[in-house]
View 1 (cartoon, rainbow, N blue to C red):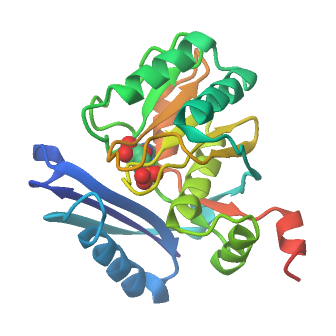
View 2: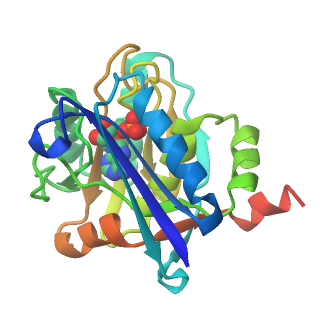
Length: 258
Ligand code: AMP
């Protein structure tokens, strides 16, 4: 048995009654780590750079180990473009190269850039038309129940790739689960942490990082998942929200630390 630990925090009451999203976190851990991991999430919720939460929800749920799916960690590379404009242009190219229609890419950027504030989850858009496919409105689809399988080796891998810090640590796990979902073509993301300007495209089996997808100081981040037309949105959403996934290091990563 393992345990899914999920946290969501907001300001001005719970998300359901209009509270502003502050932060969230997802882990899958063994029984003996539950208290420590839950306590760390509470601390994080109360000291986020987006503001102080006045509502924090931590949910713990037992999961049968046999129900956990294992997916490989995406290999990462950084596109060293300078400035937001150049990084966005480079991200557009990566998305188009991965098979997302230019019209859909443009709509995705427009949608993300016109958000009045960060959503809690992601928008599912058609990879061809850019039309919104999910019905979750301002909430978005929240990817949940995922973690890295071997946290100690993972931290070493990240340090070696120059990707230290919670943002990349969590984003690469999330992106690895997202790209393993049925019908998924690509993901585009930038953070809602005002101090963190980097963002990424996950596509074509890769995690492609850009140092500046938004200006420093902006508290508005977001995620778009580009979906192949004809995919079952119900199935896809169920996978993203409910399928427990542990992300495993590639053989090559492991070999480095033996
Ligand atoms: P973050 O990378 O945590 O700063 O999040 C950036 C944006 O991605 C947030 O504002 C949300 O819109 C979205 N997001 C964060 N966590 C998730 C998640 N678990 N599933 C889907 N979207 C998320």
